[in-house]
Image (cartoon, rainbow, N blue to C red; front, side, top):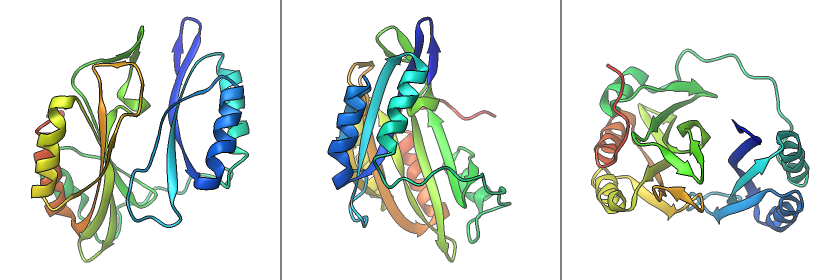
Length: 222
């Protein structure tokens, strides 16, 4: 949620089982929370899940109550106390990954997470949407042993960047698993490309860096 002069603008996504989709959408619509995209992000997960992107503008309490009511219709577990931060995920050299990628990240739940914002401002109507509301390229490294990691996340791109990024990812041995929009009226128009691989973490970081260089991403701090 981002504060505005007349409430908040809210964005995000819900991860749902297939049988949860229709009840959740019905509940959200009844409370004035809109859907901007419904799709898959990965290819071979089990059980199969769908991602429902949501958008709302207005009273923050009403929006929160609506989303809570929708979540109550799912098997999403209640929140738990945050775990103590780990010093480093086992089996992955995060310093070497950050050097190869060109951007540093943080450890969250045993996963090394990197967020790369775009350089230009993104607007939806009269609102500027910050990268923290899902508009930064997201890269996640989950260690799988022996210096390897499973990577997933999504690139945030304008139209002219889509195919150069696809080529760079494939050259780096990284699968493209989905390509779609997450919003309806953003400017400039954005496309979100999800990816997957399980290989040497530093090697994958180098491939991801090549793809990032095809985008108008904000340069890392010195």
